[in-house]
Length: 371
Image (cartoon, rainbow, N blue to C red; front, side, top):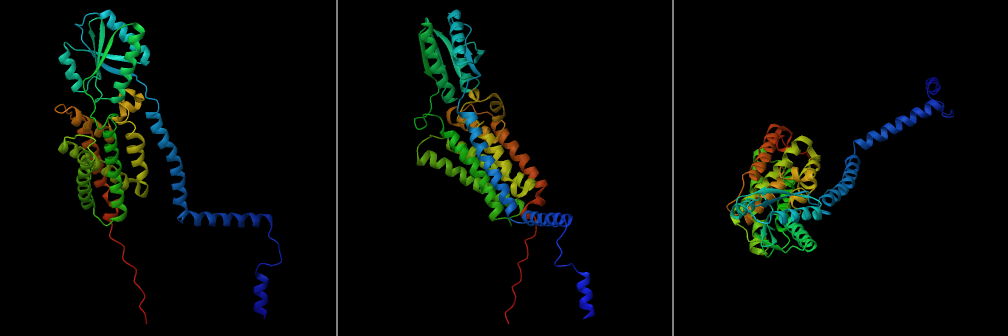
């Protein structure tokens, strides 16, 4: 009995109200405990995902709208032939075109029309401007840039009528019949880019036991098969594009593999959040600036310069050349894709200890034996 009385005497008085300081301290401890429970629960990453998805939706819409909604020419590379007669008329027409376009024609002089035509084939210029009698002949190349050809054609007609100068427009490199707007190359590249890194995401989530080299091997497998599937559906199945099959297949496979490696690089650097920088680089920035939907001369200047150095832009560049300018393929887009692949693989290999396949699998919990 004495001990019980002593215990009660030493303990808190249930009838006494806590003072202001004690109440504040208790509330602080309760809030701290609630925050600790929140940070160690699934609610924290779920909340972060909600915020990221909300911001990403706006960024996604903004990046594509910024690039595609109002394509505006800035500088359009155009070939001219100094030996043409009627230089005054030509310069007056050029001035009218620049005023109508709100941009300048970046003139490149070539000694003959044959040389200017080779520049079209090499995609160094988008049009050839030359005198034709008392009028002007404008040769465009829809295959090099359908949107640029449309803008030039529309402006030339207006300027010719305003200046009372006959204008004849020819399309030296028209698009294929199955792709009248020139968007098919953009779509197949978009498919290769997105499926390429989503394949790597699925390997990371559903085949995390794969070692790094095994993961790379399976990425090569789905890139080769996926590239074949895209090319076969677009060419043999739908007949949308008449592809140089082996070359287009190789470009698509390299694009898918590069895209998967980019995710793998971010995977070892950022763990479960790797999809965020991958999506930002490849989709938010890379696809709008690729030149596939809107040609580079019509893109905002920064996107036009950056796009060709990113995997989607390099893939579009290589694919356009393969389909429409056979025999004039450039090494640059392949070097860009190879460069991203090598850098991504090097980072993935150096930090491969952070990859799930580099860690021993967790031991399965023992089930209690029934007695």
